[in-house]
Length: 104
Image (tube, rainbow, N blue to C red; front, side):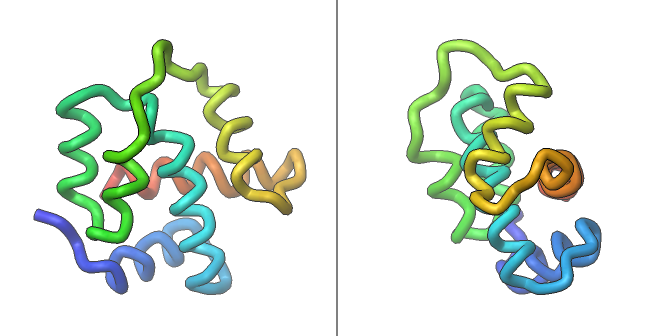
């Protein structure tokens, strides 16, 4: 069962210790955009089914990748999507963001 957008963003904001909902949304979109193509079949749809409807297009529309990303490549992919990310921010935002999203 999917969670509603507002409680989901409140959860991400709290767990990621983001100061604003906007920051939590930005990181959520970046993590999902990087993660989208690297989940396969039922993993992809299973996660999408648990997330708010606003998140589902980020997971279900792109085509799957031909090879999974390494942890370092995943962090770099998220960092590219967070335009203001410094090298430190890559790990500060990406890792907690991904853990929060996948732990929902």
